[in-house]
Amino acid sequence: MKDLHVQNRRTALKKMSLGLASIPLLSISKISLAAPSPLRAALGYQEKPKDGHKCSGCMHFVAGKTAKENGGCKLMAGDAGISPEGWCTAWVELKKA
Image (cartoon, rainbow, N blue to C red; front, side, top):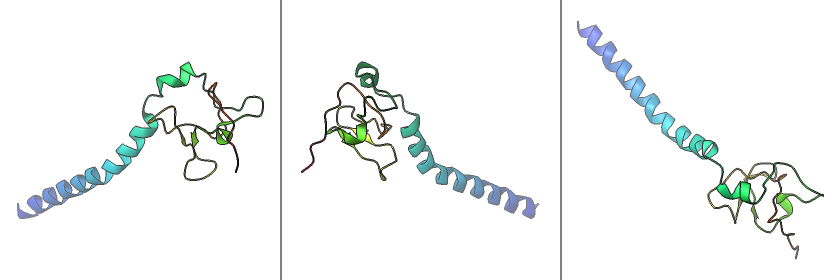
């Protein structure tokens, strides 16, 4: 009987550990699964460049961790799924110093 109690406690501890370990993963996936900004449609956002213009060359673009990772947009607050290769009607050339 005592062995069964120890096994149940171990099983419960393992499940709690897995549950706690999954919290950061859920918060990260929540960002990627969040509904896109309603401004995306209003600004005609698309995942590909238009006429050689792309988000990575726009003054509103907020770069991701690397040059190829999705970033954000100053106009679409909270939307972290903006592709550096994307484009929208609010595109303004980034002035280089």
